[in-house]
Image (cartoon, rainbow, N blue to C red; front, side, top):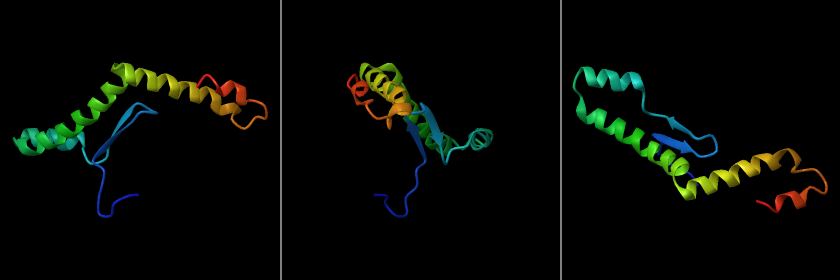
Length: 93
């Protein structure tokens, strides 16, 4: 369920390992530095670092590495997911 009147500032996608910044722009951060708008910079960078933490947890922890291994194994299965008799190859997941 999506809550009404909400928006996502940013998010991390473990499948693509990309951080998506929906409301943070590099140009805005540069402009804020030029006028010393430190409260806005702190807000923007805290959002960026929060999402980078999710990325680091995924690529730099045992849990994250196990998750990525399962994810990549799943990608290998996708081409044969609808092929009759291919179910035994799913056991290693």
